[in-house]
Amino acid sequence: MALKFAESLSRLGTESAFDVLARAARLSQAGIDIVNLGIGQPDFRTPEHIVEAGVRALRDGAHGYTPANGLPALREAVAADLHRRHGAEVDPGHVVIVPGGKPTMFFAMLIFGEPGAEILYPDPGFPIYGSAIRYSGATAVPYPLNAAGGMSADDVLSRLTPRTRLVVVNSPGNPTGGVTPAAEIDRLVAGLAGRPDVAILSDEIYSRMLYDGQAHVSLLNYPEIRDRLIVLDGWSKTYAMTGWRLGFGIWPAPCLEPVTRLCINDHSCVNAATQAAGIAALEGPQDAVDAMMRAFAARRRLIVDGLNAIPGLRCAEPGGAFYAFPDITGTGLSSRDCQDLLLDGAGVATVAGTSFGARGEGFLRLSYAASEGAIEDALERIARALAGRGG
Image 1 (cartoon, rainbow, N blue to C red):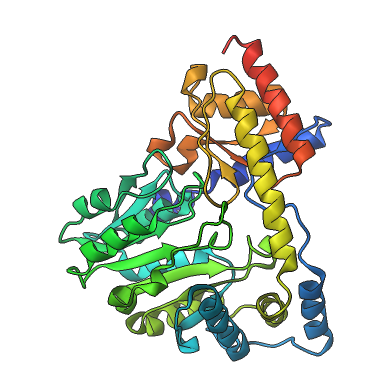
Image 2: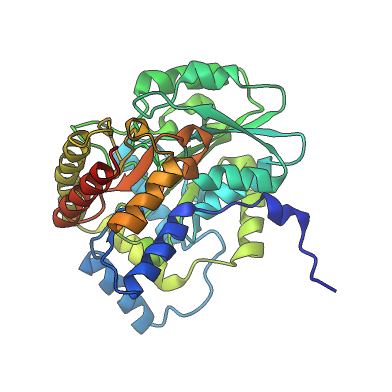
């Protein structure tokens, strides 16, 4: 008799960037030279003072369990950092430390999602939004982004129904790199003011990754929604700590007990040494972050200009994060076909726009969290591959 899996697994999706990464790794192992612009991971080392803090914690005996919501010292450091960066007052008791960014979004979907409920999320958007919503049993309601990759508040508000439980906002955004202007955030908050039954999940994981002097607009600065606001942030992108698995959520009072219970059931706690490293990251020098952002700014200019010079491609300038999201409709290829052509035929790993939702058709995501040399190489390969097929 065959094993019978739970029906809910059929509703659980994946993150295609990891599938592309695995395919690229197999090709590389077979001796094929691959330029990887598929995975959203800084190519910098974690700053040395952060690494040393983690090593020191292990040597000093930080080998045991920690509180399910995180070490008090780390939660206090998070609250202090948010006050420095955003001017927002955050009670450390509302900070919940988790292993990466995904648990915060997954727990939010489990707390608010169930059959009959609706949850709004951006499309194209981070693929785990829709996956986790559907897994919870709720109906996933996508809303489109504008040409700049930002949110239209009026469009989002038009999709609210009596069944809406949660609205997901992501700025700066993945995969577009789009930044939603403050005026649109203002309109969204004003529209949600009359819906106290609707929670908001603001994914601000790229909040330190903005260009051209832009300031991040955090939803923490809107007191009228703080009683139902969840903010997702973490260390992975800002401090090149993707493998450390460290993130946090700011949760409103009604959610603190259920989210802590989910932490206990899911992962017990985050490992102690990583949390010590997180304190060092927030309280230590920020020069490595500034240097990384200067490098990303130069890479952004290189990749946007390079893509726009290739016939068949049009690329808007991303305002944040480290992704370019070019329109490839001029090539005549679907997103998936273009992704496969570039990987198998040119040795360039990218991610099809449809991996981020149906409205990603006609687009491709390229991460410029890679060296300028790698980006230049990739652009040359892309141009040759597309020219070679007459695109």
